[in-house]
Length: 59
Image (cartoon, rainbow, N blue to C red; front, side):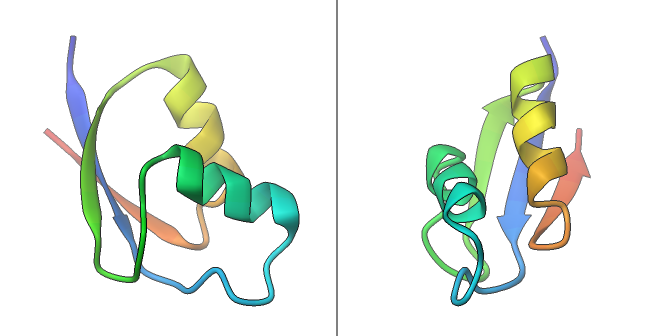
């Protein structure tokens, strides 16, 4: 299965609790942090909820 890299580009300060939980569930910890995840519908849904805070790098 393909993998995608997810990079946090905005802070979680003053975001809704659900957005903060999604960022933490994706494994992101700080601005500029990059994680690599398997591409799945569940991960895509989590990214969609916080798309204004992350950048997706597909490989």
